[in-house]
Image (cartoon, rainbow, N blue to C red):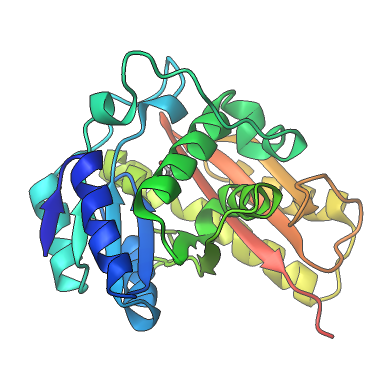
Length: 283
Ligand code: PAF
């Protein structure tokens, strides 16, 4: 497996693979890889000739008071994880190489980015859309793999690819959870032992919501109230948002119907965690 540290070298390798007629799968990450990322690599490995994992903590998607500096970085450990999951290359550019001093072009989406995490993190999805576009242009993947845990990000990237006629298929992969239910996240590393225990309240609320929907609840106000009540039982938890939206448009819905997305962001201490479930109406 190669560690590729410049945009130029990555483009050269991609050109060589393309010349051989090989298909390329891209797993975009910010590193600090966990089982959720591993499932994306495995999905890519199963269907693509070459697998590239990008490891780039993208400064553009962090707000001024967010954790850009503190975000965990360990390229040696991440490289070993990628190798163990059959990646052909880890693309690990510097911020300076990705965003030169004259960089002045951004990818901005309209309404999909306003709700949920976009409302709490202004500018976040502008950073995500811009870096993902750049990664697509550099790696030219046939398929790109993203986790359903970041459901809004996944919907936004699918929309962007369709709107801008990008030549890539976006593949969404299921949320991976710890044995006790906590959704895998690089930010789980910030939690103290007490907070780690408290963080289970998110998956408890998700399960309660799913059970209510399975039992026939369709009123989203009642569903949100139910999930908020579960979160409210945990003193260390503070709700950022709990919403039920259309899974494609991210607009709030009053009734749980086809492809409704119930999503939440909850602070456990200073750590903001997200979780969600998608309701797919049976045909
Ligand atoms: O989901 C992430 O880790 C990031 O938002 C992504 C897609 C790698 C872009 O920086």
